[in-house]
Image (cartoon, rainbow over all chains, first blue to last red; front, side, top):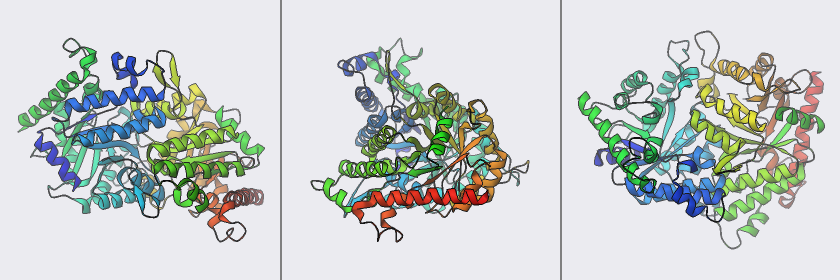
Length: 313
Length: 313
């Protein structure tokens, strides 16, 4: 099952982290933009710059990280060219042996959720016996606000094509609690109720390593809730955003891991892809070597989390 | 303000309905597919078929309806070609004087929500003084699960570019209540709390006609809740899905309108764009005249709701 492959990739590379390719044109060094913008500045040349940047980052990290996460919002900023760039980046990453998480947070009523599930995780029927993949990623993120019939099509297509989803439970942003932390009649918060639903929904997709292909998104910025949810959701794999630029530390994120040091994957985006701009690395690396800075920062992140896991014992 | 323009368009055409262009390739008549699929069947030729179908529907209804709604899920099924088709359809509709609602249900943390808001409602910075629109729609739908900091970027960009959003409050699907109807500590349901937040968030974007450019999505399939929310949210404009194929009747949807017969716009998708396949119309219209069937059904829908509003008095 796909979740086993993700866990095995983390174990093989001794690295439970995912690099978020949330690339804006502002992050791309001047020498790349100078090349693609030489004739004209438009969505197409911007996306060529971004794809080039992404591929160089992938080349620099594919041997040390198990997966990349592509945040669709940053690609949709460049219109359909950007969506093509999302897909081209995902293909390139898969060719390099990386697993790909599409961070798309899709959600809709049943029939429409089925369309989203087909788009990202299945195959689209075109005509007679012709069906094609629209996007080819391993996992996507999904928003639970519409309840089970907005989730079921994703589960069905995950089973059919051996794919996985991460459902938003407790997000990493400051106002996450405005709805997610509301206390309900029975004394549980909304996110705790969602956590229970996610457990139930994933019950029949549990892999050989004990985790379900139906995972949860739990932000690193709420370490106590992360620890509690790890205890409450023993078979749910966590995608943990919020490390690095958003303020989550290694000490925070390890709350999402079980006693064997598995059960979660931690994302960092800007801190890695923009490492070459940081005060930590900008003296060691010129912008032309942005990918080497990204590699160094990805190694530091891996070591930071590994050390915290060892220290916890 | 954009919400005034939408209300004025509904009043001018005496029609508070929106046609949902949720076009799957299966909906496109054979004669169109035969033409585009003559050489090859792929995502590109599928999207050419869909765009042709959409444009003929728009030609047939633009003088009688104020707006179209494009459900992104059905376009993403065809990959980046589909996303281009979404954009081309939106442009064509705007050229014909229609307002366009992008039903994308986007949601994310603050910085990423800003990227989505920029993509659909703003302009993307490319280089020096070059900024371009990625998609150009008037309104989009947004999911509130992440709370205010995931909403604020949409509000900021709406103010800057005179655009609007519809935030999911009570959706039309059967399991909507699984999270939305949970009773919270104070006795209100989750969707009632979200309704209050939506009211607050829209307070400083109220147009001359008394409604905010920050609207709410409330399903026709929950008519009692729709009636109550109309009373509780006097300045919030409603986008009402669920009429027609999903089971909502004219008697149900009029609960979303105020005493002047404004304050809401009702969506129907399949019942209109697939009218030519229905037992109601398939004797009168051959598949080649699918757009005439769509026009007839759109007129019937307008009259159905107008009659129900008159009967209510």
